[in-house]
Amino acid sequence: MDGIIVINKPKNCTSHDVVRKVKKILNEKVGHTGTLDPNATGVLPLLVGKGTQISKYLINHDKVYEAVLKIGEKTDTADAEGKIIETQNVKLSTLKEENIKIVLKSLIGEQKQIPPMYSAIKINGKKLYEYARSGEIIKVEPRLIYIYNLELIKVANQEITYKVHCSKGTYIRTLCEQIAEKLGTVGYMKELKRLQVGEFKIEDSLTIDEIEKNIQKKFITIEEYFKKYPKINLDLRKLQLFLNGVQLNYNLENGVYTIYNNEKFIGTGTIKNNLLKRDIVI
Image (cartoon, rainbow, N blue to C red; front, side):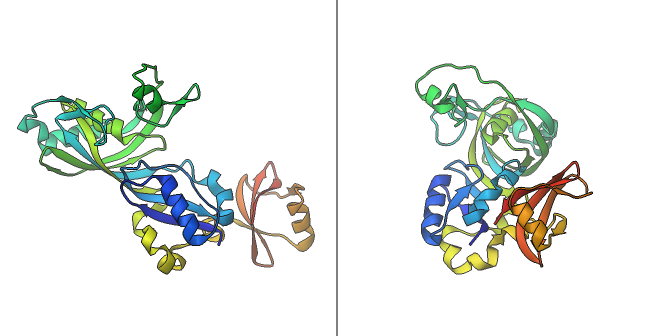
């Protein structure tokens, strides 16, 4: 079994916990392309068997989230797991939908975002949350991100539920604090659900309990994942050269190609400057 399965990660479970459970169920090598916070739920693509070889094609995907922002309270971790360190009275005018929509619109586009101190980013070989827990102050450089869209879903009980489409590397906890600040108050991320990673959507996912019964219906083979790429069919002689790492002359555009021999899927190759090079072989 070689390919991709999309898991709907439950709350209070780490990405590594999910990998371990799925590995035990399938008795296959399993990996992920990026962690999802333990208190978050939703889309977690897992690579199975030789599917782990295609991780480089999945790590830079955009993401879509649904988040709940709690207004009027600030925590030390910027999410519901932390301690409340500040409270503010929230005016009714602050929670008017037209005001919130204006703020959300103002945050769309390219921007620099400072990652939260309670994150797993490493600086000088040490994770940021380790510095934070020890009370050590360290300078964190901002990162360039892109917010493609922000959509208000509902406002109720001093909570703002919104949907965001963003680039890789965006911290929704920080975005929640930004929204609250622009509304003239404080806030933290109460809930987070990841709806999409690249082309992988939550409606295509399985819970861990559903894997054994339904995996065949939802499993994405390596060949299926690369079906959108152009195809090159190699005869037996060229295939042997290709598999041995020899670069072959092909007058085609630079890019990724699927490689076949007599309609049998072999893997992928890349063309650069009219030379076809072996990439992934299954």
